[in-house]
Length: 491
Image 1: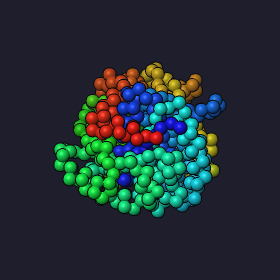
Image 2: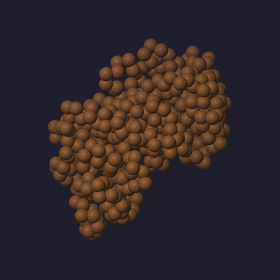
Image 3: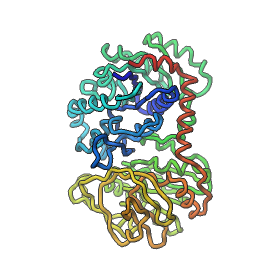
Image 4: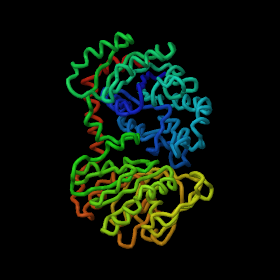
């Protein structure tokens, strides 16, 4: 059996994803063959990964976090790195992806009953992901302290106890109350779960670490657990793709630059890391606009990102009066890019005759492109190589979408994907739609696109920036954590 260690958090958004990615890179730098694993993930930021042995399928879906962690390991992502992915479609329901493929839809209460059946898939993938590896680093989901869900848990202690994987608990000091969160987790866990924890670490510390010495003593007094270290606020993590929409409010570039890019924060926003390469550009300011706020009038570009619920988000788009803001932006000569669900919204109409997305079966689009979209049951999931039509430059990315889009503006495609025309462009060239995620990651294209907006861009190797950020995070963890002890406790 491959040796493994698991990171679980005292709550959501404590930084587990980045810590696992950093530890994966640190282990790889030591010459270990390392793999990431997350039994269950909930995110609308998905990546396309290989389905081993399935030569007829374009690819399968996993959480974007495991895609990043695979990069940190220097290996190709596999669907077995994240065997269960939940993609929220409504406040109470989600699409369930199992080993990369759509398994079905489930309301939250129904999903709890379904978990027992999914543990078999989790353990099957667990066996596969460790093949040929020296070490697997596992990421939990949410918190093991959610003891009301323990009986059917497959994401935290339910998995750790079944697979016999020791656990390091992660506490987030930035949100406050970290002593209580670590000690409280110890207090409420049943003994079977508590004995799986080999120690803890503190994440996101700002300032003089010695000021927390008494805090560490207090945690030791309450829990008896060893501390593996205190991790400072990792500035390099801001250059890594973010997975969870809870961080959207923190993703703006934060300073005025030559080009402002406005991004409406859709309720079911998906794959918003499409904007990360633009954020990395020195002349570009990316502003995520929350519901209730106007799209900024000084934006030169509006990007409507992907959505897990195109019709639902289109209706909310109007409720927020963003349609009027967008119309005013166009009158001022502003540019618009729609990606995937955002592309569908830009047309005249979106129809869902089979009710795939919900009870509302059609909605009037924003009317900036002369196209219509009809939702269809078959889902397109594939990595692609493409070529930009307006700039005649190579693109690389992926598709994850439902729906077929037709109409006069598709005769002006934005890209050629595998020899097939994709997307649409308005007659004046200022509104562009595409089904391809990741287009801004193509450095030459991004530079020419920004140049067409009057901005000096390009010159940044975005993928290399991600690799550098991973190396910097790994170096920080090596400096502040007892990585020898963490890796040594893997079993």
